[in-house]
Amino acid sequence: MIGIDVGGANLKVATESGVETSYCPLWKGAPLVEALSRYRSEGVDGTAVVMSGELADCFSSKAEGIAWIVDAVKRVFPGALFFGTDGSFHSDPSPALAAANWFASALYLRTLYPGGLLVDMGSTTTDIVPLSSPGHLRGLSDLSRLQCSYLLYTGLLRTPVPAVVRNATVHGVSTPVSAEYFATSADAHLVLGHIGEEEYTCETPDGRGKDRGSCLRRLARVVCADLDEIGEEGARDVAVSFWEAQSEMVRGAVHRVQRESCPDTVLSAGTGSRLLAGLLGARDLGEDLGDAASALPAHAVMEVMRRGLTC
Image 1 (tube, rainbow, N blue to C red):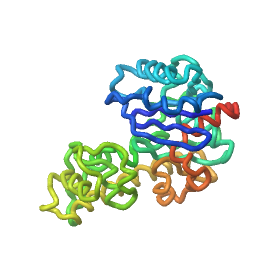
Image 2: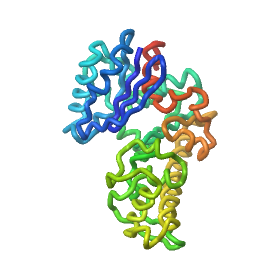
Image 3: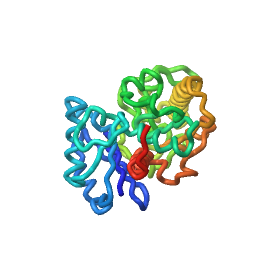
Image 4: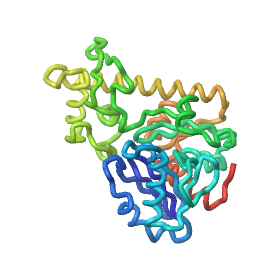
């Protein structure tokens, strides 16, 4: 059995032997069929799929994206079934397939932590999902989740710095940032020691290195400077300002959902699981589920199919 999560930037695959995540940017024509082909033998007993890549701007609509992803997956796994926000598996394209990956996670985790609140930070987004009543979650779109704080479009790696912070404190001076794609959350988190160079798995804004020095140079440009002007300390100040703003964004949304759902525990997952655990005092699912927590929807949809879970 195999579980697959097709995102716009990353492909996550869960098998009986573990999980793997690979950078697979659909908007750049990444060869999804080729990437999936190496797992062909794993899907003999069942292939369960979720997606969020239909939103990639290489598609003119979500419907086009869903149809393309379904076709690509079925070229490799003809019997694949696709899980939707209606709580059902589909063999053909359906509007319900759009961004249903978080819902699979909710159904699976509810069997383990029925009163919990899941906070799953990936490279691009953060899902905040109350697990107590999955029926309440059925049919929610990304739009509706954005509107009720269940989805934050901020992540560990790919978030442009000016999407989160408008002013950075540099050498004690509040400084407006440039609205340019000079640096991302990955640059800030690497400089702050939250990730290592091997965890910087996406492309860099300038196409250059992922080492600390390269990250500092990109962060300096965020305030229209370079390292000769503001030094390492000034560039690190930009990273600190970014993380302060991003962490406050996440904390604020989590607190809003906590007030509504009154969970008995907060659970962290995704590539940012360890960081979230420290920030929120959450239970790091990496300690319970191992590597599966880093690719939770892929693992979860496999378990949803295996167990016949419904809401």
